[in-house]
Length: 275
Length: 168
Image 1 (cartoon, helix red, strand yellow):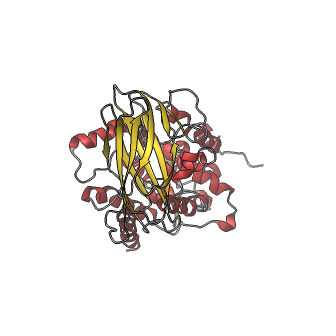
Image 2 (image 1 turned 90 degrees about the vertical axis):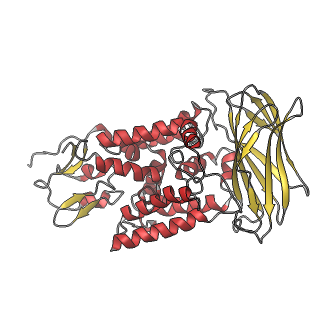
Image 3 (image 1 turned 60 degrees about the vertical axis):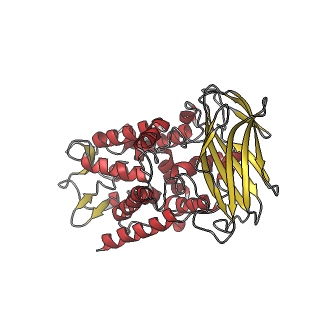
């Protein structure tokens, strides 16, 4: 009988989905526990993580700074996410973000025949094409993508709509319905459930840069080539299609969210650690 | 080459999304203060643009901060002719855990506003083919004095350029 040499999976790997569900319970309605500390009921206002870093044409320096002050909890959240990502990988995106958590958990429930596979689409060019417009269009005064297509505005209200009239009203305008369509197509019915995060989340795009920059210093998901038999199981379960199978397995750290789903199915060739 | 194509495609589609404004929603930011408030981004709605799916339904979100020393109850009235059917909804926690005191809305009055409070008030207006100027007026319930005034403009089908202008 062959000895079991597979190392014991860590707490984060074993309980990832429970952590995600816990985060959804804490951040989203009906409890919205975190936002209630600041008199908010969702991610808009002091918790907004998407708007403060966008410079709009005609803005003065003090107005730009006031955006940071107004959304001080969102600023704290983003800075914490970026710093922790640099050292430990994308914990916010893979375990704690209730928005990506919702799309991923819902996609698990959706039957396989309904799912769309976006793995043939290169995610980084789309993500950074979107981020370029996200940052440059408001600076040039030609438009904005911040609130109209905001995943942090939509998902909490999707949960809140079951309980609150104010949240239901959000869905009574065309832009919100289009945003909902994007969440459904790129989230709920996407294979892995994270195509929206991978393509259209500006916070995720910034976090991915931090992840790439910290690759030499921080802990990351890594492949031990000498132990890999190129079975491809890791690539099949990767929700952000960050694993490429050529003659060997490579991980694209601009897309990897350190969820360690690959580690779960691998017999010891993939581990999470320093270089 | 494939990456370049997808990058360009993403830029073009995102630009279309960024520049096109749906005419059925606007967001205004205000300050509620004694002696009259202040509003940024007064809303402009455009008849027939944007509300393809929900024709005749316009949504305005007013987020406002209460500036010291104002405190009290505020009556919210949509003023203008012809009258528009409107409803108010205040964003508040579904399950209030009592971690922070929150103002509340009953009918058309916001109760219990204190300095530093922030409100997110949704105004749903249902009317097809309206044009002209309206005001979302906030009056102190006791003194009847204005504490904030949000001018709302409904434009006709001809002028689409600034329709649905809202804060990002």
